[in-house]
Length: 296
Length: 274
Image 1 (cartoon, each protein chain N blue to C red):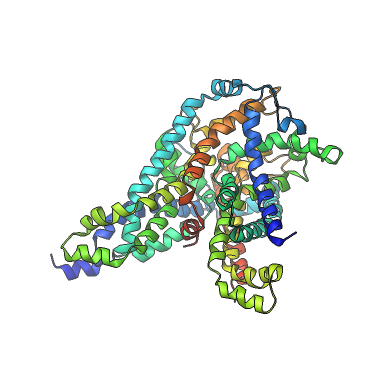
Image 2: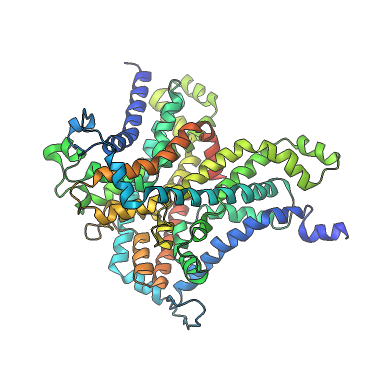
């Protein structure tokens, strides 16, 4: 074979194609194709049919989107995620940065602390929801401690408290990952920046504000995006912790509504439209976030 | 009081808040009738193993655990074999489409999996007929993209001399991968394996959608079904629920405590942000 010719077509080391092929095939099958299918479904009248049976699935334009955007359940779920993000994102950024900065300065028991913080992150939501159900049930430990201050009705059945509690749960569960991300960013800040700040008598909180916070800005942008994606993916918590997005829809999430409409009620086309709207919303938030956090 | 003291006080208080639910889960799972008062946080009696017997009789604990192990192992095997190959190719070999593949790999990490849930459900359950099968539960997670990234970073970090020496000896690319790169990759396999493990082991939504047969469901699903079906109905269900939660949580916690050295700030940030 003429090596330069194959080289031009397949690249200098065509064996790479062979090595990467299974992964490329995998991405095409479970990522690219479903992504296209989701968008296609959202513009068609799509319904479940027995495999192999030819059915007509007419193009319906924006009809599914109109159905979705006019549906009060869907609007409620997006509002709920808004409430979730308003609580979860700032809390996540502040707590993970403060704890990471403390951890970065601590010498003793550092491993113990680091592991303690990421243990919730590596544990199944289902297992953690079980203990939160116990802690926040009406006769649970939290209400025992609060006594007369306990909310009525109790946390998980209280329309005002359910979503904030889910936001708190997810903050606690995910914080370990974000602490690790900030730790890496903190280790990359040059030491002489702090020395220069110390010359200007900026130490402690002022050094934190003027050196640390700007120094980790790219990490903050990443944390905000990842926390937003986690919020957009919310399903297990409304399903289990608040017993199906209760009370009365106060803690539903878009993915939970997707599950109800798409699989329980058999309307995968409107469910796909919810998914597309959700991703567009996430992308918009990411873009705005980049504009604010990544400018120098 | 020095600032150092306050820093440490905050750090340890934080750790206490993070660990308390785990402690409470463990204690509650061994109590005859969970006492929710403040005194009940440090129980002095009423210990029992019965909650574990109870949850075992209701969700077939052993079978569920076995299913979790099978699904997770499938994902780990797929990720290690095909992920190492892809990572090596992306890092060391020049072939057509490398740039595109790399870009798509990064993109995968931003698109929420949940968007793909409906079309994947249509494909896997309706078109491929893989409902109620291990293959159907494994398929969407079969090669973890973060792990591929970790492998790529690892191979890029290896010194070039290592490879050029072998190349001068006339070794083929396959031989270089097998006798130069693979023997060195073990620490990266541990890190990538840990990151991969938490996906399928903890995943609830996907196996919940594609499996209706209780004998095939992983523990996260059987336990969740138990929680949502009996919550509110049983008189004192928490003992059994907490026992199930301990069984589901323990393997992940044990792995990450044992191998904490391989799950550090640098490992994670190189894997997540690229």
